[in-house]
Length: 83
Image (tube, rainbow, N blue to C red):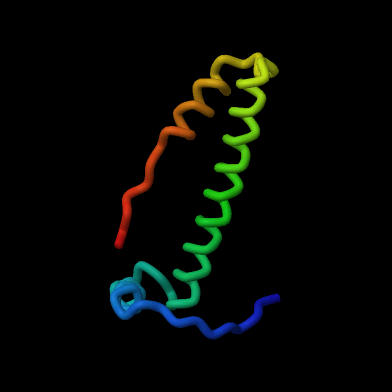
């Protein structure tokens, strides 16, 4: 099931959507917007998991050194500012 919504998107982002559709990289604007939202949802879920791992590490309850290293790496990761 899907629901149609209306949103305002900056002109430069709409131009990007249109370029992606025109070049065949996406089937439609909606597909690309939905894909971006799904990616953001996953990123936020992963960020929450990192916070849980960091809390476990701080409490001394994280036994797996690989997970502790992954949590530390993820916590320090930055994303480029696109503005």
